[in-house]
Length: 422
Image 1 (cartoon, one colour):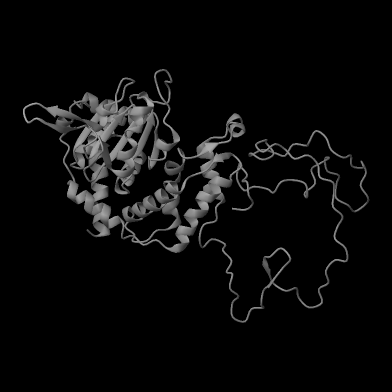
Image 2 (image 1 turned 90 degrees about the vertical axis):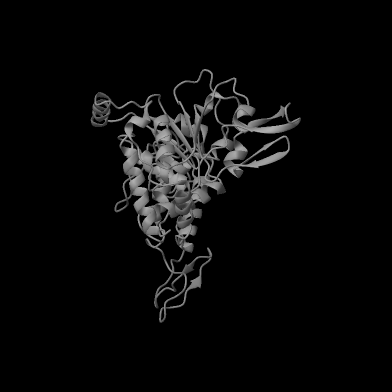
């Protein structure tokens, strides 16, 4: 299949699903991108915003086999994966397949199941297989898990561990619709639409399972330059050095950015990846993989704000880069004491006789105070006193402890980073 066909089919799938799933175009686009990248999606939103309707509609339009599991506190792992039963007529043990053996699995309210049931899905999500009684059973291809969870209720729920969250390619947030979208929903219901009866909606399958596998294979032919790979690695490394982050993104997150960037390029009709393809789904890839510092959470810093700062501060390939190799005819570069290349000074230049005296260092503001997070610098409460009157011709007196040499390096965004320049 050609990449141009991938873009056309993608648009047709979006159009057909939008007939039923109204007003959530960004969520629909992200889910389809994740499926083409062979990833799983965690949908988070309050009840009644259409999470289950989206997954059911996907199964019909994509021609995939669809199953649903309602997760409850008493759900056992064998209820999801299947179990081995004794057949008295044949006198043998037979494996009874669970609902996980499908193309599209809806894990509804996945955070209501206990940890042992949640862990039963880890192998299926990562290796696309299920092992029961020492026998490994492969899952159908393609295989996707779209899990939903309610962020409001805490009674009777079990938070997903970080290991399982990392298995999800995307975490998408579904918000309440706007007034215009809600009016359209009401008009659809007035005209006879029933979410429980999708047959009446007359949804038409756009592709088959074989066509969708061909689309996945075509996406892998998108070219990826080494500069884009370096850019992705810098983004992930920046999340680990950011001052508001306790644990940064894993290498699996870097692979996720690579895969989704390829899909986004194919959807846009290109056979090569640009930096915007990497950034387009950065929040969906990273928001469930970062653990913030407790102090940052107290200050009200959110994961999405940190991701915005990381995407903004990481240098994009081709934007303001300096070539390390000297151009023909240019003066040779010599290393300085700091180890960085520099151009030799022009003739007649004399270095200063003595370096300026070091000024006493005052107290630094806290890591996430207003001095660092999007606010004006506030004077420190204490520090060495400065003379009230400055000599003529000198700069105005500054508050104690706020000299340029003693302040932390300025940041370009609302949050600083740990470990120097990005």
